[in-house]
Amino acid sequence: MGRVIALCCLLLNCLGNSLLAEPIKIGLSYPRTGNYKAEGLELHRGALMAVAAINSSGGLLGRPVQLLTRNSASRAQTARGNIERLARQGAQMVFGGATSEEAIAAGKRARELGLLYFATLSYANEVTGREGHRYLFRESNSALMSARVLGEYLGWHMPRQRYHYIIVDDTWGRSIESELRATTGSQDRARHGRSALPSPVALRRHYLEALNKAAASDAEILVLALLGEDLLHGIRLAHSLGLHKRMQIIVPHLSKSLVQQAGPKVMQGVIGTESWTWQVPAQEDNPAGQAFVDDYIGLHREYPDSAAASAYGIVQQWADAVRRSASLNSEKLIRALEDHRYSLLKGPQQWRAFDHQNVQSIYAVRVKSREQIMQDPFKQDYFEIIHQMSGEAAAPSHDDWQQERGEELVLH
Figure 1 (cartoon, rainbow, N blue to C red):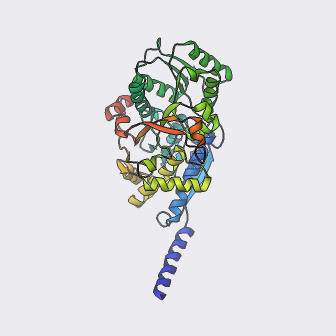
Figure 2: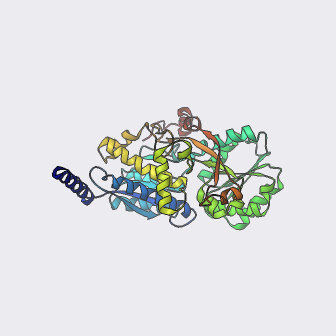
């Protein structure tokens, strides 16, 4: 009995010493305010859960992990400044972002400072394509990956339809439009029209002009290539104009927060993509993913979004690379991450070596009817998975990537 007590005391002492040690700091630059603040809240929650899980298991390299945060308001220049401030505070790794411009700017500054940067909600192909570099990894899927799963589903179930695109005129908007046109065969702009909303601020008249142009067309499918509050304004006005009654509305990237804010009645029947939903762990029999869902529900009394899962996965994967390399050195961590395969909250995933894109399954989803949603205990069971594509099939090939890169055929 005495030996058991002594052993317990020794273990507690070791744990206490690790938690009293100088913390390993990581930095999250995310939108607490602005166009993507709802998605930012999910990122913050997921990151906090990962840090808590790591510390409850004794920390990392005998030290606790501490999360530092700064508000980016989804502005590229602010995000760049955040990376500098987080580095001065001692962050060993930085992550976050809710726009592609933000991720590109923050990633460049992180490289200059010798820090790894993990992009979260940044979907433009350029992030791991033309603008990619050794110090940047992207957990979220690219525009091409979303377009491929949507294009395959629409080609099978809604062939030979006329499209109309409304995009936000930024890096991601142009990227997703180009990819969706290619995968759906709607490149002919004379037949498949478009409107581009000004970035970063579109006014009500801009939305109305774009939607009235769509209404005057013969389009059967309306693509709203918008994000955040831009998408909220656009989808609400489209609904009030009755466009949902005669057009299938496509939103390339859906989220829990979008449906919550717009309302199930407005969002009913909308088709888009998700890289993860809270139902996936149960459907794929993934215990770690289900534990994450259950813990999130216990903390917040609601279901987690894919943004929370992305932040959680990034922190856990970085920590895993630290353990495997026994180091906080960025170069050693890059080598530990490149081509590393794992399964955490869903099926197989991989940090691909040549472009640092996370290769994972992508899901086409449809928003359920309001009646179905209201039957759920939390009234948040929003998405029906209607199609799935493997990461290998969805992600760009090495040849595709090199074509985009031009003369710079390796990451620097």
